[in-house]
Every structure is written in C-alpha cells, then in structure tokens.
Image 1 (cartoon, rainbow, N blue to C red):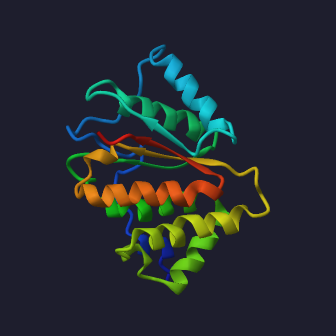
Image 2: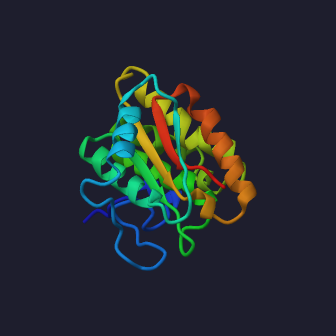
Length: 202
C-alpha cells in the first residue's frame, strides 16, 4: 500500500484555531457573532464595501474596548463564507495567537483552501522555498505566499475577489512587527483582487 504524500501546506505551520469558525476566545468561550437585528448599519456598510471592487482595499474597524468589534468581524466572516467570498480570517487573542509572524503563513494556508489555483501556486512556492514560512523579512514572505500566488491564480479571472479578515492584531506581541505587517499588507494588496478588514491599532 502506497503512503499518502504529506500535504505541502504543512510547511506553512499555520496557527491552530485562528479562523473565525474554529477559534476559542481568550476566555475560552465558543466564538460568537452579533445578536440578531443588531449592528445592522455597520454590517450593511461592511458587506457593501466587500462587494464593491472600487472601494478601498482596507477597511479599518475601530472602537473602544468592549464595543463588539470581534462580534462584528465574526458575523461578517459568517456571511462572506456563505457567499464564498471569505479568503481567510485570523482572530488574534491574548492567549494562544499573539505571534504576528504566524499571520501571513496561516492566511496563505487558508487562501490555498479557498481556491484551487491559489493552492497550486502556493504549492509551487513551497517546492522552491520550503522554509518560506520562517522568513524574518515580512515583505518577502508576503510577496511569496500571498501576492505572487494570487496574481498567478487570478490573472485570467479578474472576477475572483476575496476578503481577508484580521481581528485584533493590536493584541499581538511585538508591536514593531505588527506595524511592519500592516504596511506590508497595505502595499502588497494595492494591485491584487483582495481586500482586508482589520482592527485599527490604538
């Protein structure tokens, strides 16, 4: 009996329970979204932004602690997932998901599962650079795992459009890394058909 070859995506070492539908909150509770018929206006605005190709690439969701930003992001993920528009989601927490350096590899792993062409392009990257998930230079990592695979996969399919949701990145350790990550994402997403919803760090 032939052994099943390992999935190359394992080289990305994605963080566990980072996506909206698998994570546990910092307090250990099950993830939750907005209560029915609440946050209607902001969710309507978010969905309009998500589906408008001419809208800005990044939507900053800001507000005081405890105002429900995570619930809003979770509900948006649920809706985009049903519409097959969610490319990836990374919900940071003060407990297990504080390493900002795991965001790019984990996002790439989720994107690969969202689209077979992106998956094939990321496989090619991993064949050439098996250690790409461990690079310390985030712009190179972002280009290798996110920008270039997306460009290759969507070159002949401009209608492909996904949203990446990054929740509470201001809670990650090493604020300097977070700042580099934000700048890298904004610069890199300027010419690819993807958008990102983020917390605005305070």
